[in-house]
Image (tube, rainbow, N blue to C red; front, side, top):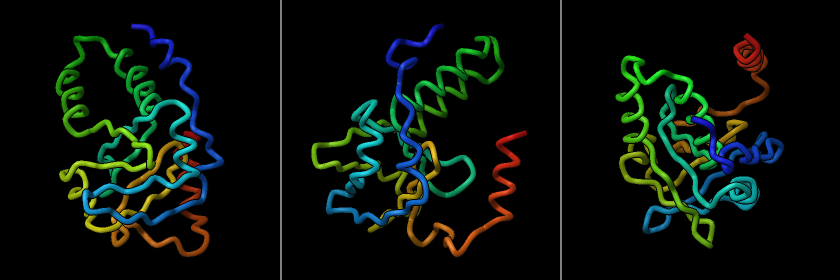
Length: 162
């Protein structure tokens, strides 16, 4: 099935705005936090909604621009034949474990309690750039960034180029 026009033409996030930043945000009484202005401006260029889903490797959440994640999912899922074993289960699991988040006029986001618990978030969230999206961490769980991790950077670049 071809991509819808809005999916095909979804602008990619301005990567430069996502590089090298971490921000701590406080949850209010309703467990909402304010998306920092620089990231809000990147994410709302395509939609005023975000997807949030658990990271597949770490105890954090991925926060994606709605159209960007939909584009990636559609490109991947529509390449699979309907007869692919487990395809229906895969689609259900992704849908069950993710959430669409509206961003209100004050740039606030409310992530459901189950996902906040998964990430260990209680009073504060740490937002960390993951180049194409943001990661939502409990400040206590996010590994410290101390100096340059040349070995880790080399390994990451090697995985991208293989």
